[in-house]
Image 1: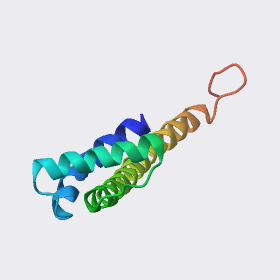
Image 2 (image 1 turned 180 degrees about the horizontal axis):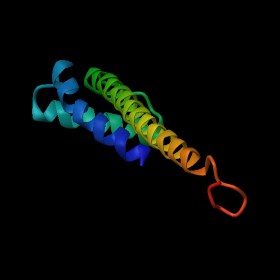
Image 3 (image 1 turned 30 degrees about the vertical axis):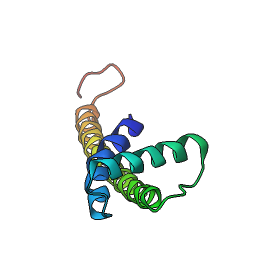
Image 4 (image 1 turned 45 degrees about the vertical axis):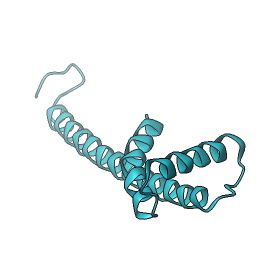
Length: 105
């Protein structure tokens, strides 16, 4: 699930980062995306300026994706922790005053 979140958040920022890097034409974007795919598959550094710009844009986009995934995960853990604390407190309140047979007294 974390991989899906990182990719979802990262891809959302990848295209704008390509345009910020000056890859405004569809052909340049295609070359840049191909360079990123080659790097991810074979770990070969891009040899063109467009490829290097695209790889830098992809790195920035996926960094944002990781950051956003960590933030979402931390938020979910905080909510689940709060719910757990409330349920434990409620359970403790119900068990106070009960003897071993489960009756109050």
